Length: 171
Image 1 (cartoon, helix red, strand yellow):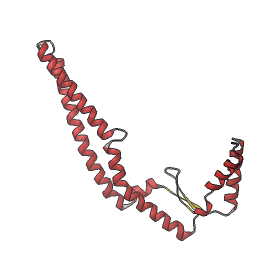
Image 2: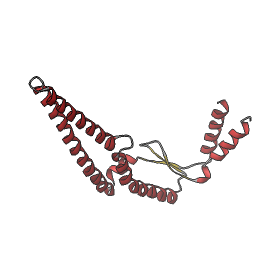
Image 3: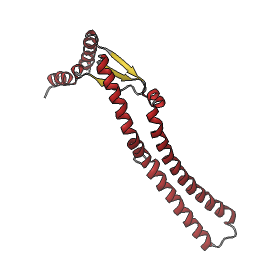
Image 4: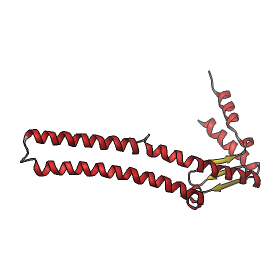
């Protein structure tokens, strides 16, 4: 661990001593103010509104069945009560499956967001790369995410770090 920290300090010192030009952007501001992003956001919002309507309808159906069971449970026959409970369980399962399908970790919401935003992100990165090369920047950092969005290959120390680590690693 000490070797890693020492190596990191040395690399940072070497990098800054080479008069490296670093710039930064804020992707949140770019995406908020870029005119091309508004149509993409509108598409996404329309899709989201459709899913929210479907979800609300399913939630209302579940709430209605719960209310029916609550109000009528004393006067319903056991057979009718079980029928309503079965219908309620089915609606709850349908709602749960819908929510998972749309809003789950690998749901359609995430997929749609990626599908719609990928071309926009590529466009923004292309603009950053072009400006960075024109103005001679070595690296550009995104303030919104902390990610490096542009770098000159000549400043990539990945292989040097791997070589150093592998050289000190004992078999």
